[in-house]
Image (cartoon, rainbow, N blue to C red; front, side, top):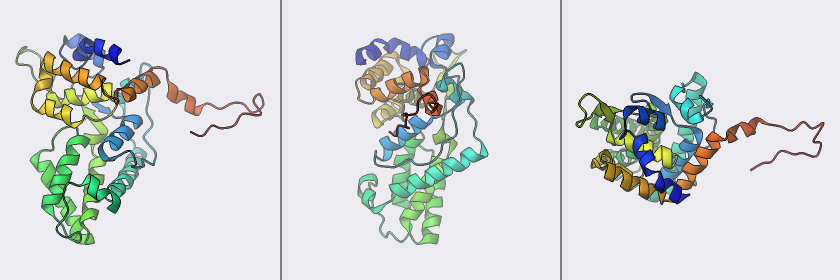
Length: 283
């Protein structure tokens, strides 16, 4: 399977926009400027990769829809209902509460507040900048980061708990469109003045979603930051690296599960009149 993905490097290069506009659009199904909501499986893998596999993701998700037979295409047409917003808010609060639990602080926080009962903007900034970079698949702007540090400090002052402030700010990030949706942002193509191309961080997000079914890792984000994904050689280097990673299994499984419609089996039941001995299988 790894050989198959390595031999398909050219297809992936085309899929993230290095080929002709027509081929790129068809291969990636990723029109520039359009939001694509991340699906349930990508949401769960992203949380596990950033915070640890022991974080329980419990709650309901906004239902996904198939377009042209694929959930991946339907993601570009996905909208959020009022109920869906409430579901994601519940998920976010539960996840954030687990992240700041005492037993996880030493692992997930690279700093400790000077006083856990008071705000510490420096430590909050360090955590939110690092975490936000992975959640948003790009670095936070100074204004984005400053606003979240201020919000965390306000809650910490009110509650007398530094980690309550962090949980509040993290919960807010987990319901942000910058996390729940993947945006294909464009920039001018210096080699083709009449055309646009996907920017570096959009390429990283598309690659990680396509190959791994999760958010970009640190190496991929660093490659995006350095502009390496804007060249065929740099992009191919990352594709080959990612195809050699154990994470490729998640992307392969997601691809075939979508293509073969495995999710549709969840709603199937056997008629007890014809299958009296059948029971529900709990995984």
